[in-house]
Amino acid sequence: MSNGEFEPVIVGFLCNWCAYAGADLAGVSRLQYPSNLRTIRTLCSATVRPDQVLKAFQKGADGVFVGG
Amino acid sequence: MSDLKKPEIRIGVFICDCGSNIAGYLDMKELVEHAKTLPNVVFVQENLYTCSEGGINEIKTAIPKANLNRVVVASCTPRTHEPLFQSACEEAGLNPYLFEMANIRDQCSWVHQREREKGTERAKGQIAMAVAKAARLRELSRIQLGISHRAVVIGGGVSGMAAAMALGNMGYETDLVEKQDRLGGLLNDHNIVLPANESPAVILNDLKSRLESNPKINIHTKSVVTKTEGYIGNYTVTLNENGAEKSVPAGVIVVAIGARVLKPEGLYGYDGDKVITHSELEALLKQGVPPAKHVVMIQCVGSRCEERTYCSRICCMTAVKNSIILKEADPETQVTILYRDMQMYGVENEDMFRKSKELGVRYATYDPKQPPVVGNGQVRVFHLRMGKEISLPSDLVVLSTPLIAQEDAPDISTMLKVPLNANGFFLEGHVKLKPLDFATDGIFLCGSARFPSNIREAVSQGLGAASRAAIVLSKEALFTSGIVADINPETCCGCLGCVDVCPYGAISYVTDRGVCEVNKVLCKGCGGCAATCPSGSARLDGFSNDQIYAQIEQALAG
Image (cartoon, each protein chain N blue to C red):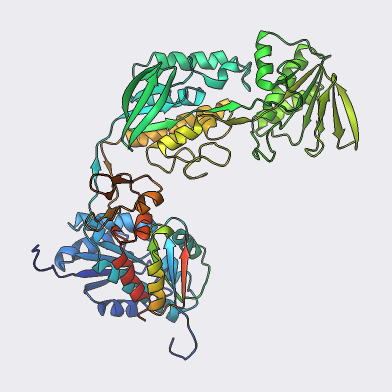
């Protein structure tokens, strides 16, 4: 991330029961995707507070993904 | 531990190679060195397989040796391995909720196999996030619950009877609640049950005598459930039996209320005399074969239409069965079945279909846009293959109507807080993984309450639901998860926002104190309340705001 090219950082909130399981399945299936994602496991996408999304942007996230 | 001084947080990080699954794609040395620099980390170890006996022992040894009070494992997914590592912590005397995982295999090494450097960067981030969260974890406890080793089965049709019989045979006291004055439900009205060609009385009498002779089974006819309270292992079910109220305890509840046959009022000149349903035909057949010489059967009456989009599954085989009975009674009887698609799943049904054709039953497809017209002793229909309208003489028209949801299904759904689907049938927890369970623990379903079923399916599902229920009843005690919501009564203003969003009915409003309170047994830990609460009074232990904030900060610290 130091070669001057723009590398976005994306914070993903993933529901344990679906999106997080889907992200695991992507691994089991060896699907390849860019490594710019940082995942946070939640027990339901409904538990993601709006201020958590804002917090991520405030701290410099280029994108926020809520999967549920 | 002193209240004045918080104990030092000492985190141990175990980084798994997973053979070459992780070590083959990420720079493990760099991960270990990076982990050592993270705040509060006092111990870092790389394992070949952390989940192996050796790896587990290394965790159990390190906890007392390095005086760890938090453990982080960076390996696969918590969805499969968290319980194993948590029990390792517990065995070493550490509260299992002081454990956190970083997913560096399924969500890192496996998906970044061609980007060693960047993948390693992500793994470092995920480990730092887990460590930051671990530092903020609190000890949580599981709640132990007693169990009432009894069951209530609602509905005394063939499915409910099978469920009650199985539970009774396993030795669990079972209350079977039937609203009519006799057991058997829809099966009472049938003429012959295929493929064994048996009278339904044979099946019913067998089930009834087994139920009645089992002292563990209490049969309540003319009874309805009026109220249920409690939760898995500890329900109280109130019955109205023949006008008298009584309460019974139950650890589990099985919903087996079945379905009813649609009366096709206003369709195809239905009059219950010359135009009847298959269940009415079966009632006639019990007395003897009706004298009709020209019989027309019409399929999909009131189903697969805008109002009811579903296929009721069992009407095709019923029509074919009855057509064979008519043909065998008198080969001169003309039987024509007007259909859209024939649903004859299974070898036996296909055999029956072929047999009906051999006996001379005629089949013709119709287009729902040009449905048959019944009147004046004939049925006129546009024959799709011939491309013209034909007229069939008929002295009896038999309509195949679907099974529809019971009238009291919405009441039971509300009472038990279990969902119905768009057609009013009960909705299982998962169509494949939990077909006989509701999402609510301790409540199960079987038979046509779930979807139209034939006798064999209803019995199988009844036995299956009983087995699922027995998993609960066979336990000495139940433990709830420690990951549950908590509402701070000091700051809660009683706005009821959380009560509205809770899908499990786990939050109630305490009127005298003006605050909302979580029933930790009913809570499933989804955290919907925590996200909704405007005052931040509701928090989800194990996924609290400060823990998530810490993860966000670490995710973006790189």
